[in-house]
Structure formats: structure tokens, C-alpha cells
Length: 129
Image 1 (cartoon, rainbow, N blue to C red):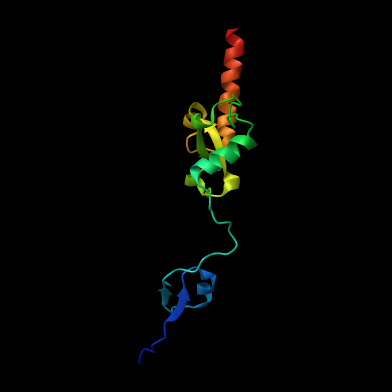
Image 2: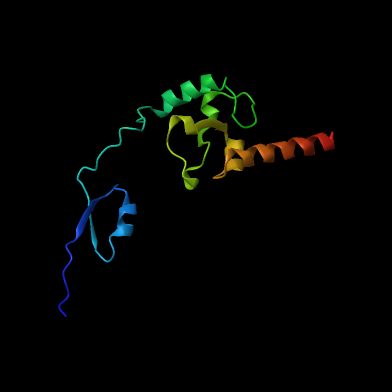
């Protein structure tokens, strides 16, 4: 019995690959477009670090978004509210300014972790005084 050759199906990178479930044993070629298509549904980041600092500094009233202490703008660091390592994006809504101490405590964890650690610290300080 001669084996029947099945033509390869072509999918573009970014296509919904769920269609592969119904393809049985066909092979699939991925076609890379040069340049790749640009997504129109995302806001493009056309900001500079200095301009972002100024806008976010005003929005946060010159305070760290973690401990709420007032700082000069140059002492605050850009941080992802939802970490990049967990899928957080470089969108303006996902960025905040934290002081160096809060940024080190938070690391690559969500804001809930930082809030819990700061609450623990406040409780310890109340117990001491």
C-alpha cells in the first residue's frame, strides 16, 4: 500500500494554533513575516524615562507607592505592579514609582507581597514602642 503524501498546511506566526487539533497527522509550516505584523490593539510606549517619572511623580503626589513616604523624583524607581516575570506588560497602567527600599522588598513579586511585608514591619515597630 503506497503512502499518500499530505500537503503541508501553512500557518502564520500569531495565528490561532488551536486549528491544529483537527489536522490529524499533517505537518505544519510556520511562516515568519519580515517585518512581523504590528498589533494595533495595544498602546505604543512613546514615553521617555524622564517624562514618565514626571507624570507618575505628579500622579502619586511625590510619594512612594508602597510605603507612602514623600521622596524627591530622582530617588524613586520604576517598578512593574504586576511583575514582568509573571507576565506583566510594559504598559503605563502596569508601572509605578517605588523607593529603593520598597522596590528591593517587592522584587519580582506582586504588590500584595509588598503590602503584607510593610504591614508586618509596622506591627513590629508598634510592639517595640
